[in-house]
Length: 431
Image 1: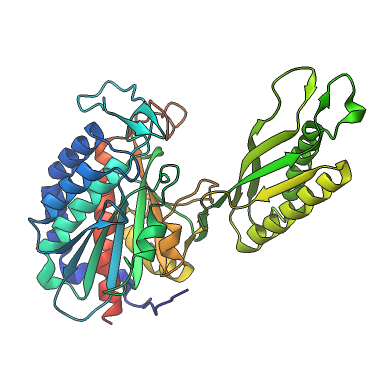
Image 2: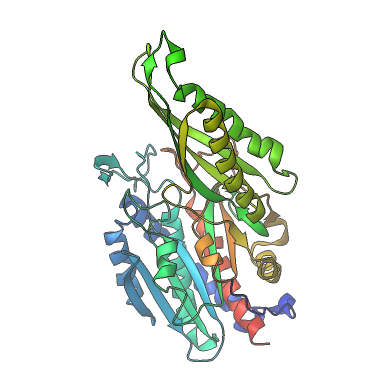
């Protein structure tokens, strides 16, 4: 994993040489556009690897800025490079573009009524996770930084990434493909920053987690083959249902009895079981599908080993055969916030949001493919508040639901954070 030296000194005054009031004025000026862009993206969402009109909209705006644009990266991704013309670090800023197959139930003037094809079916489409705000915030940041070009050092790479939610069946996409296609090269990126709007965090607040912030995700499938028989004569069978039941229970002991959970959380979940079609027939085959979530590299390796051991051992003890596919179709690494970079940027977060509004948070077992960027270069991923202050956390709708909603007012802090982290990292590198 590539690591760059980071300067920790002089951060108490970092950003001031750029003119704090100038930055604030530029962000205030662009905020109405950010809201307008967000409303457009929300009203016209597109699914993973199908963000064609979204990419065109972003590209058309970027053409009005002094940046070099590359399109069709990882199919629909857009990348723009702002070159100050002066030596300095290369800083990447990332926003994801895709929406979800979710029917919107909010009464908004910019409500989505879009539909699309997803795995052969017509489905409703909604920005039910806030990626519309991410694109708008990054466009706003691009506007601010290009207007400050003569004060910058180095380059800024704006990455608009498709398919964070996962590519359609039979396709590849997202950050992993972008990395393979060289998005962090030419120019070579030194650090990358990203953020996610959060419907359960108050507007004006930002959450951060050093080291493992979000879990690695590893889907799996187990196919158990036994011997079919009449349900009245089970002794004539090798019962894959009973074998599957034993496996489900045994897999839970990997976390509860084999992992040191005081160090990092982990999850092994079986999400579906398929087998059989009648009450009086013991089937020949049962299929289990599930997911693994880990926040520690050693724990992830242990779960992989334990899954093989338990599946093989239980199948053998029952006289059945079992095949484990792990990972199944995709796999995300741990979203790992580089500790040194996190420490360097913490004064920036506190100065930008206010010390009381910067919250140290526990890791979560959700996943983010921003992790693929962090495997290559140091990265920092943050949560920015989108919940109105007059709405309780309990009342705030969850992400990936038809009721999901965040307030436009939360986006200004996102633009401020992306801008100030870029400026401060440049200044620190110039010391």
